[in-house]
Length: 292
Image 1 (cartoon, rainbow, N blue to C red):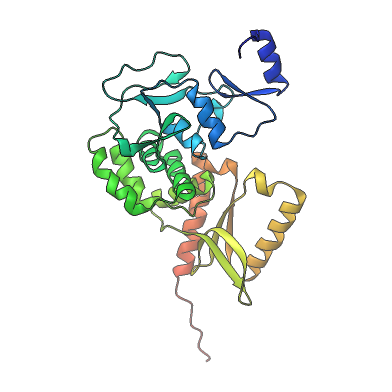
Image 2 (cartoon, one colour):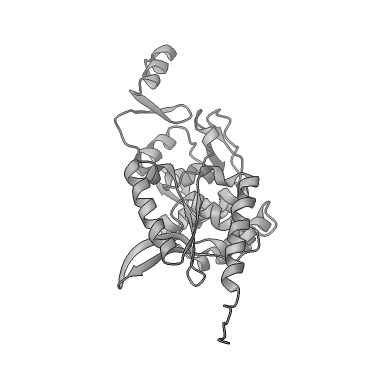
């Protein structure tokens, strides 16, 4: 910020008068970041021959996918320059050179950004498996492209690093997933050889859609729910969840509840075993009783 000393800037960040939105770019603390302000921030650090890509592009398109550990210090802007131009040597920019066609990016507010679908495909190659699916789910949910659109792009990724993972993930992308943890849950289930659940399944009571389940096996009457802190931590939230799950269990549903601690490897094995047992139990033939 022009005219501000480092000491004054650090104090302003500490008191939230300003917030750092990108490496080297700050925003007034009372301004809610929008797509436009994100693009204007990117324009300050991106060169004229660069395209904003990968996680920075996803952030601009409304699907943040940085690891929580990275958020204590703002990550560099991820960009790639078009073939024939030297990559940026600015410290706030990360990236290299990438072959991109004009259909792969759009220019908004003077900044070239990979399209949502191109961003999804790139992240499907570069992020770890569960985060990649969550990013692809989120970009499809927010920007309305289809599985067919993703499949049509796959041939262009031939021999690219990460393409094997991308081929595995494309058929699994689902815009009904409403949070990254729902995507992680679904992928863990599929990776353990279990059938894919339905997403956002409504239970009707007297013909009225009353309870919506995050993930469900409707015929087996099994619900898998993820309790995030945002919507499940207040006393009112907990009371509502208790009443809802009591009704479900009283009506023959098995309910498996997950939280942020449920994704450690040993924790996954526990709830996957429970889910596998419930699915096996649902497949057992009912016993027939005959009068003597």
